[in-house]
Length: 171
Ligand SMILES: [Cu+2]
Image (cartoon, rainbow, N blue to C red):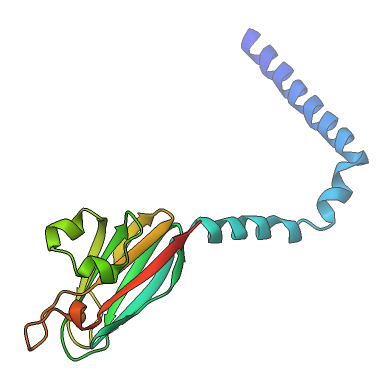
């Protein structure tokens, strides 16, 4: 008995709630929804995604130089490496911790040079191929360098034939 009574009550309450909602929305809600919802929704979000998404660039190596961007935006960066040359090439990427240039660092003994830099990553590619793995890292603003130490046919590392570069990561 009690159960059926409360079911009726619940049904009545639900009906009252529906009526109440219907009455309330009659006045103001409908015209707002009907008008123009589509325009303002997507554009601010899309801009944010572009700002925070990973930056992807391709660096090309040939004999004996890198073709790379001069500047990159700080944050998540993916550097693909393509070998457009006839010899194997690598792309060693590092952050320069002081005012040294890559050219200056190449003149130092290896152990000493390493004290001026922080390694970021390495990619390698055979002639005419793309590197199997890009260099992906979270880069903070600063100066960065890249070099290739693959030996040329005359045994001299490519870096000493000019295969090095610098780029800047900006805020
Ligand atoms: Cu090389």
